Length: 540
Image (cartoon, rainbow, N blue to C red; front, side, top):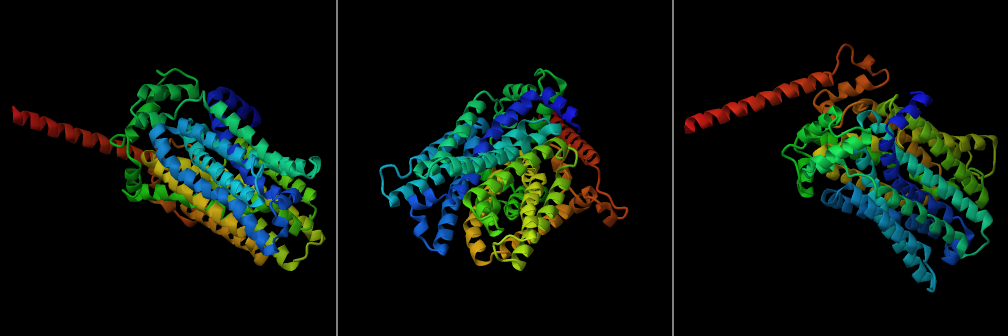
């Protein structure tokens, strides 16, 4: 898609893009909180205020891991809460609630230490981060699902990827706010409080933008509120509720929910294993979010100033500036990916290329660290710094935005809340684990940290190539047919050069599988009708 075509597409579906941008605003504060703490930890004013400068190197590493990871602990609770709230109250109201929780947690962090001792101040800061994390966890689970459920199929990938784009914008802004605080605010507690205060802004904007947006049509169908669902579908494509496209989509959603309306959360968890196809579709989102954390992205997001220091950028201001550039690179790359790659390359190719590029970048950084463990600058140091930025580029091509897109597409409609709850919980569990362990690994095994993540990225590339079918261009209600049979054959068929390994073997086209399923449904309906007729005749 060219630039003019992209602009025309945005104009045509401006309601859909407005809805996606509004929900994605929640990912700005998600990204903001992710990038915020790593920079604040490097400020001497923060270290002195909380007594961190008096700790040993090992003690500081443990503190850094704790203060970053407690937010992820809150996120896990938020995700678990989401599965109940979004089924009971809907996606929209749950998203607004997540924004309110985030704002309250951010305000607590802003006032930590005012009128209290150092020990109490630290406990208040911990509590504020856990509380804000509940809101972040909720929005991380809800936003991709809400957007995916509302979007037309041909822009669904691009719109769902806005979640990651907004995440990177929030992260980049937090990097530059930290840098600005380090050079423009005098040494005082206000120097580290200001970034906490500014993070309230995206939370307030998110709530204001979400209020006028409609509810998810698939949740409305589940509640048997069909007229409202039709209005939402008509709104996103800017047409009338009587349009044939709207009516057809509504009928497809209804058919997918037959016998499954108002399914309780406990029942959804049981239904995740009701068939091989459903179990496979429910496991892929969790695999994707598990892999996403083992790319090593949060190791760089949270501790990039320390990583740049190890590569020779030793001053606080220079490290924060280099981190700000890292955030800018991610925003630009995700933006280009959304416009030119997600709907043209497809999900599978983006994930595969991203994993290979990330793996090579991480292996280079680890190899350089093994050969040159000193923090002095040598010519290869500049190559390693470039490798960090290349890592960001490849992450944003694939494993940044695409796991959320594929997870939202693959999850079955009737068990989507339960499936995404498990997937996002796994994401935050391993985000917690990695953010807790990264500072310790950087201290203990140094370059081995990057080698580990590099090998993990190569494993992801192999998994994507062999086991993930392409989902681009299919309606949410049709994606189930990709997993009916010959999943590995279909995956290789969709992989670059994969048909070489198949010879003449091919997976059955989705159209044929769907046609067979429609015929079977008609046959079942006819049989049921005949049985009812026989019963009536017998009664007479």
